[in-house]
Length: 244
Length: 244
Image (cartoon, rainbow over all chains, first blue to last red; front, side):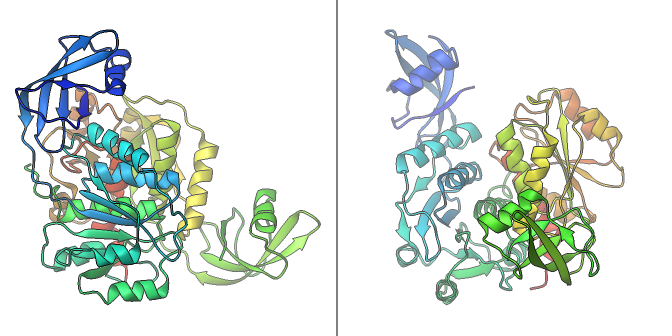
């Protein structure tokens, strides 16, 4: 069934006037018509089944009928990453959303190459990925900040796992197996060119930062981000708590 | 240092005449000239440092000088995957190479959408990814086959882990933690549309097939492939055996 994100409240009392792009998608791409059902979520009220009705030639209204799934507590990992070129950045946004990230923090570092971010475009990618992967919220995308600004604002009770190449670090699986469990960590992925030595030394001196390795090969930044998140979810995240 | 893959033997006795595209890349993109060093690997003889010499206006010869790293035993995991459209297929080839896959087996299934494969193009992607990530071999890409042909030819001593959605399966981390260790598994990633019920039932009846889950969200096929490989390497693969 088609799943769409909406900014509107979802309850049994208010109907949802769908914005033109969603109405166009439903009417002309998915060939939906009055009486058909879709699923709606807004990141607050769970997932609702809603009945469509056409309105005029172009618009569509959705009438939420029943809540299928309650809203889970949002406690996913955070992902901070040195901003990359457009393609790899969009890949990170899409895959991190699929992998349940709660917050994305794009940053600039001494050796990062990109310093401009199209928030609207990246947010649209996150929404589309959330619609597709059946999660009930959309990750927050923080404004672009410098590594230092990001660290200054970091909540110190949340661990920050730092993927570092070419230094001897414990593999992420060993770290997570031996460290006391924490509900939701942050992961930091540096730029293709690596950190400046003083950046990495500064990070590793912080009490909430822990270096980890992702293996013997040199991963591209977007591969490192996807792998680290996938491992985290599978080792201590919500894959573990799944009933099976 | 620039790393290039070559088909030639690498030893202290034979020089390597580089093909035109590599010579062009070295001379005109990387601005290398006579006397500069590069690294060469061929998947058999380890990694060699080689000294370049220009030959005529366009050609370049590399003289292997010393072996930096011996060739490791190739025992990485295999990845079988329902062929996707070009973009996601290339993404899988690139990321699987970075993640140390030994063999890629593209297949067709009842619900897979693509049925043509440009071997030369995919192999070029694998070579480029291998050059970049510092591994010493290039994964084999098997010819496109049907799921049934792939299963008929599967070596039964190698486990095949099957990522299955929407059925109750153990998370991959739990499976790998509790199953007896095996040196190198295979992973099977189905098409976006999922397996036909009879396909999945048939697979699960085979003694070397084991179903696993990658979590509560519905991952795109390429995300599932990258996540499954990353988890495998981090849990039982060569990330574990890394010295640290």
